[in-house]
Image 1 (spheres, rainbow, N blue to C red):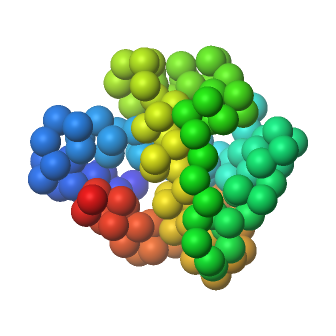
Image 2 (cartoon, rainbow, N blue to C red; image 1 turned 90 degrees about the vertical axis):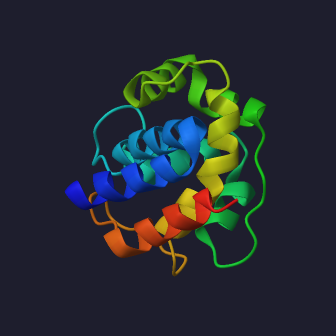
Length: 142
């Protein structure tokens, strides 16, 4: 994971303290998404299932698909993930819990889109590092 750490560090340094916090959150989210059947979400597939069960299947389908990503609100993120998972992500990223749902709402569609470049959900632990790094780069170039 040294390549990820290096890229995230460079992206964070290039984008001030806010970028560093966002890169830490992306790193924590990637850790969550790359889990197999572990934890509450069961990796990317489990997280997508959580959103589908909450009635947001069309939204996450747009992230996985090859078209435009539909937006999601902080309130919807809060509803799906709940305080427990949001607190775990905030702690893992070393950032304050306040506002994490909003940060995820702006970051998660693009991150999942880049993890599923051909409209297919990869198996847990099977992310293509170069496509993830390319995606991270575009997320920070706002």
